[in-house]
Length: 206
Image (cartoon, rainbow, N blue to C red):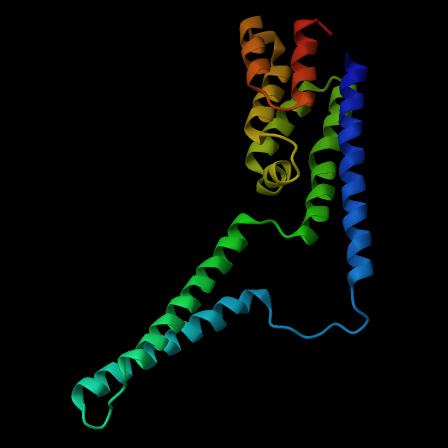
């Protein structure tokens, strides 16, 4: 069973290495010889917010001037509607921009996450399992919960639920203090093959 566990870890390492290499190769091919200057992503929201403030401010000023000097500023309701529509459009685009930044992981960063997950989690786990170093397994379970890069990479790269995997690792590392019922319960809850193999090895006594 230990060889099967090691094989599963190796398979995941190779998959992540292949993913990182494909993305890195793709990035090299797509890099232009003369990059076109463009605004920094972090400043885009400033431009959008500034545009929204300008439209709303202009609309407010025109409304006040029209109310105070109706004979001079005879702005039609249709023109006012144009300002309102423009303000709403910019607000929607601004909200969409922040939603995209929160919900989507840039493709160009996935290779960084893959390398980090191999280095910080899977490679040490492989060594810990081979040497039956349960203290190190327990430490890696804690890293999976506490390290935001490792837990984020685990989710983004489709490795499973980091909390459930960490729980399975804690059970594996604390085999002398858990019952077979606890192991079976953890086995039912876990959502990836590696965790299942680790827990099955405890039930089979390997």
